[in-house]
Each structure stands twice: as C-alpha cells, then as structure tokens.
Amino acid sequence: MTGILPEDAPDPRVEQVERLKLMPIPVMGLVPQPSLEDTDTVGLGYGQDARGYSEMTASVTYTLWRNPTDRSDPMNLADLDEQSRRAIEDVPPWPRPAWLVEQVERMRYPQLWEAVRTTWHRDSSERYSVRSVLVDHVNYILNQYRHELGLSGNPWDQPATTVTDVMVNGQVTVLVNGVEVPGAEVNTDPFVYGIGAELAGGGVVAAVLPRAELKRVQVQFTTRG
Image 1 (cartoon, rainbow, N blue to C red):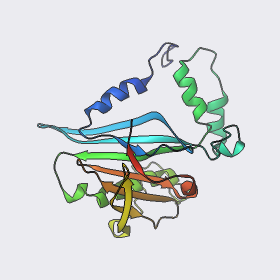
Image 2: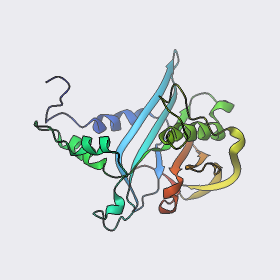
Image 3: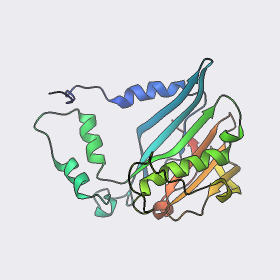
C-alpha cells in the first residue's frame, strides 16, 4: 500500500520543533488567547549559500475558535466545499496515526494558515525591511482569496500581488513581548489586515489575519514558548 502511513508513523511536528532550533532568533507568535489555538503547526523555510544560512522564516498556523467557550458550537465550523468535506468524512479502511486523525478532524475548523511569520536575514537590505517583509507576507496570504480576487489557476502562474509598498502605513505601534514598538501595517485590503515590526534581537515579525475575523483576535506579539 504505497503512500499509506503506518499507524506508528512519527508525528512530523516533533522533527519540526527540532528544526526550529536552527533559527538564530526566537520564533514569535500572537499572545495566548481563547480564540486562537497554537497546535505546533509551524513551517520553516530557509536559504543557503557558501557562508551557510542566509535567511530563515518560521510561519505559525492557528486554529480559530469563534466561540471558544463552547467548541461544539456550529459557528466554530469552517465553510467547506463538498470536496473538502468528503476528504474529512471518508475514513479509510486501514488504521491511521493518531496525529493524522487529529489533523484531519481539525480541518473542520477555520485555520489561519501561516498567520505569523518570524523572518531572519543574515545581511541587512531594504528588501528585508519591515515594509517589504510585510508586503510579501500579505500578498502570499492573499493567494488564499483567489476566488474573491477573480483569479484562477495556480498562484505561481498568476500571483495575487495586489498590495504594494505605498499601501503600508509606517506610523503605527504594536506590542511585542509587552513593549510598545514602532510598526507598519497594511490596513487597506478588504480581505486581510497585516501588521509587523522589527525585533530587538534582529529580524522581523509580521501577522496577516482575515479581516472578517479580526474582531476575535488580539493582535499582540510574544515569543512562543
């Protein structure tokens, strides 16, 4: 049965936690809050050259709970198409790892994919400024809204580059580990809101969140535990 994970297959998140230790700076997230659940779904991207790692990005995904006091409330469910619903409900006849079953079940609920990014670059450049990193993050997340934007096909064929540097407001502040620091925001897009800041130890943290859910989220950054 090629492509079928054995029941005792290791949880890939365990290995990912170890890989995150490669980050030269702490990985950031949003402050703990009832409406967001951090399930250790963290992606790590990096670039290398002859001198070693030149850049790294850690991206944190959250599960959104619209009614965190009652997780059985139907308002917590994601708006799924028929294909996605079948993928969740069609249980294969073979046993699956517990972590995989958990991940499949979690897809019933809204996921804030790669909502918070911590970005580190070895060399300084305007390309790696808060403004540039935030714009890149916003446009990346906007690929989740391709239908709403009237786009079709694959993101690499027709990327959703709808936000530019001129749309960034650099006159805002944001809390990072309880300290108010200068930040930058994108508050002009109808689908998402983005905000970011430079980190004291180097690097940039940015969050891009669905505007429709913004009232449920406390937008403050903290070092992940």
